[in-house]
Image (cartoon, rainbow, N blue to C red):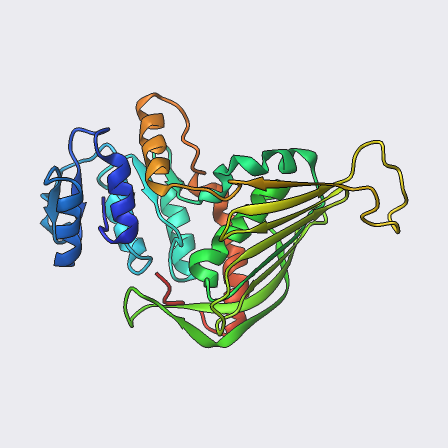
Length: 313
C-alpha cells in the first residue's frame, strides 16, 4: 500500500485480516505511526519506495497517496505486481492521466480505480429505466478535482456512455484550500456536459460556499431529489396508468421517501475488493480504462481556467 494518510488508513482497515502480510509506504512519520496502531503492528512500514528491495513483488498494490507524483508511483507499481487498485483523482493533469492509461493498457496487467459511485445499488432501477437524464449536482467547496470526478463518472455510468462533451464551463477565481497542506488546492466552478443519448449534467461547486451537496435527476417519468448529507431522497414517479400530456407536469405523480442511496463504507469496499480477487470474482470497482472518458471531461472543464496542471490531492 502506497500512502498511509486518511484514504490509506481506510484501505488498511479493510485489508486487515484478509491478507497474510501488508507492506506500507508512507513518508510522514505521524501517518506511519497511525497505521501501525490501526494494524496493531501487523504491517511492514517503509518511508519511501526506494527502501523496498529490488525484485520484491506483491500480489496487489493499492495506490492511496495523493495524486501528486501518482505517475511515478504507478510506473513503479507496474514493475512490482500485475494487480493495482488506484485512488482518485488519478493525476493532476490530462497529459499525466493519459500516460497512466498508456501504462495500464498492456496484456496481463489488471488495474481498477476507486470510483465508488458506480457501486451504489440504490440507483440500479433508475439506470435500468433508461434516460435521457437531466442530472444536476450543486455543492459548495467540494472541489471539482477530488469530488467532481465522481459525479462526472456517475453520469457516464447512469447514461451508459463512455464520454461526453463540455458545452459550457467556468472556473472560480478563488481556489479551495486543502486540509492536507498548503501545497494542495482544489477548484470550484460550473460545467454543462452533453451525452450522446441526449442526457445532460450540470455540475456546480462554489468555491466561496461551505454548503452541502444535493443531487437532482429528472427522467421522462420521474424526478429524484437527493440530499447527500442526510442521505434522504424524495422520488416522484409517474404511474404507468397515468397518460396526461407533458404540459400537465407532475399531475398524479406518486411520491416516496427513500434512504441509504448514498451510504458508502470505503473500508468495507476495500474488503469486498480483496475478497473478490481471492475468490476469483470481478471486483465492483471499475477497470481503470473504463473511466478514461471521465478524466477527459474533467480536464475539459478545469482547463477553462487556461491552466494545464492542477494541484488537487
